[in-house]
Length: 68
Image (tube, rainbow, N blue to C red; front, side):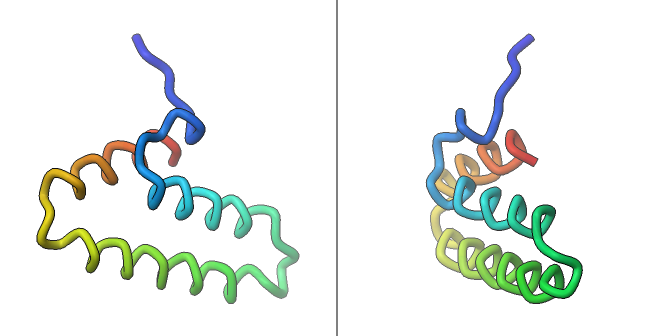
């Protein structure tokens, strides 16, 4: 069995997104929605940038799943 953390991720975009969602959990209640919106925008940008690169998208998905 292998345990992974976000630090083990092999994709910079997944690390950036995981760090963003970490900020959501640490944010004051009045800032949660704004930060979550930013995270969602980052996610959409990542998905769009990887839509024509299935191999890179798979790497992102694996790394992102590891740190969720």
